[in-house]
Length: 374
Image (cartoon, helix red, strand yellow):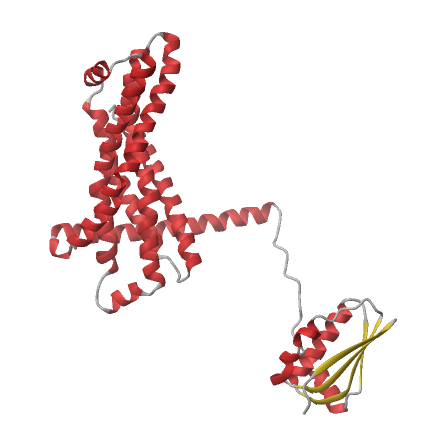
């Protein structure tokens, strides 16, 4: 049998489409692109099948699809040169062809908006319950590892402490130093109006020690280490390494989650201390330059007016922030579905949720300490 071919002959207002050869599935790829490109503004289209040697359901589908497409464009399509058997096949294929319906437009209006908000609320609630379940599981494994140290993996723990703690010192120190400078400069601008420049010490110290030092450190750790936790564990999920762990009888929570969470619990208070010190140094330097408050006077007044509870309030928050960041970042990693797109989406979600949760918990702590008078 001959190879299939298509010949177009235009004699306005008619277009003649001559098919020839074997219109069978195994050879349709040779004319599929040509048939798909047939469009016309002419009123009449004739499909001539007199030179067709063979026709099966694949070829019939090509012809009926072309007919339907041209008729949708406003042309009148006729078929000639086909035997009764082939016409019967064409009619059967056309009768059983799926309807091409336009996608239904999404509902609009107030009711649809309320339904969308309700669905989003339900999804958020279910996600919160799953995170709480994961938090409880992680807390159980963490406490068990502390009670029975044989479950702990020291090599993994120290590696994560180096990655999340030691390597984060430069950026945390720089952040604290710059925040101290900004607070001193902005505070000096306002306090000069009242001749109260010396109170810049309390402004800087209380702001950094109670709130900004630990909060900004936690935000940096969430963006730096939290995203790294999600990416590393998520990539293992994509490559099915976590399934391999379970097949070997290893608990992914013990192997992957506990060392990372415990590392953050240990290093975040230390990073907060570094941020506090750097912030005070930056504030003292800016106060000296802009207000003439010498470093000796700055730190002397710091000791006299700022109590140790201001430092303690900040450091008490650090372990809670660390646990939140570790749990959320590892939870999101465990939700990766096996594609790079899912991995990127979960990493972004991890950072956003961790930062939001840290700020929310910080607000709760602020209310709590205010209520008890600390």
